[in-house]
Image: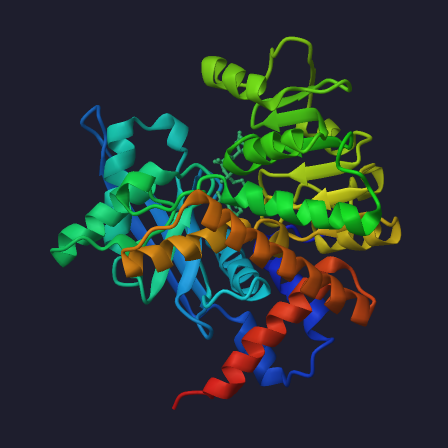
Length: 418
Ligand code: NAD
């Protein structure tokens, strides 16, 4: 808790829902149904460690809502993962898929583990056992996992292979974010960042903020953050600060993201990149800049620091980086926030393309992927903007009103079984 602010991610997700649902004509029962996760699975994962010992990890898979199609959502490996965090992430996936109008519901998985402490063999055994434990829930027509924090294409390949071994045949569509050599899609790796770039471009047009020369700070330098930095740099923006879990680097004259990637690959951290000074993750959020991109974890912009944020535009590549109290402060201060369920929906959109390609066994070029992604993200941005303007609310409420309305309508026409 920060002051009176409840930072439990599921409490935040509930509050975000309530703050938008009141704009829709929903009866109490339907509201209750839309807020409640459909299935929650907790599994224990025994792993034989390289030293001969045995360790047991806890894992989760939550399906929040499947009214519009199979559950969809990533798998996170992190020492702080909790069931409530996975429930929040699953709920955000429901609204995200609806915001960009994909035929999916929302789901998410996680394992409470520090993957940096495990060898590659230990990680493979952990992943294969976790996949086995959640196997009753997942499948191409049921629930389709993908990468998230500290999981990647290799993790997805192990899951796909494990499920395929049980089936007796190769089941490509059970996960997305796979290597391109193994039923993956061109453009999936960088899709989250590419989608973020497309909506940042639209937001800049809306605000009359030229992207060329705009100053950008990016928190988190993994898949989402490093690629956003690269793409905005290509668009002519000036990347003035970057950070990872060990801290940040700053140069008001600009940092070359490629040089930062190379430095991090060589040394394991961003710190020490020539011509930069060290800053903390907290300081990065408060730097004067045009565009701030949180691309790490939840609860970074809260009631505590929202009045010190000096960006004009915040694009949430991460899930849940801003709390509801912070949203109100930013809105009052005229700072535009492109909410996570829109800003980072490029990842799930190209996951959808991958799943379609796997089902058809017919694969697209990178240009086709990018074309369809741009179409989806641009349309979603303008639908969210129009909804927000109609209700005179911020873009997060606009996105939630649009998304909740779509899921509510799907639920209404399906009816309640039995
Ligand atoms: P990743 O594992 O590739 O990278 C995570 C990055 O965050 C690393 O650079 C790490 O050093 C940094 N980090 C970890 N803890 C931090 C801390 N306390 N402060 C600052 N940085 C920290 O993960 P990713 O896939 O890039 O995911 C990042 C965010 O984007 C998450 O919120 C995730 O849910 C969201 N997201 C990812 C995807 C995707 O397709 N990968 C899609 C949608 C949303």
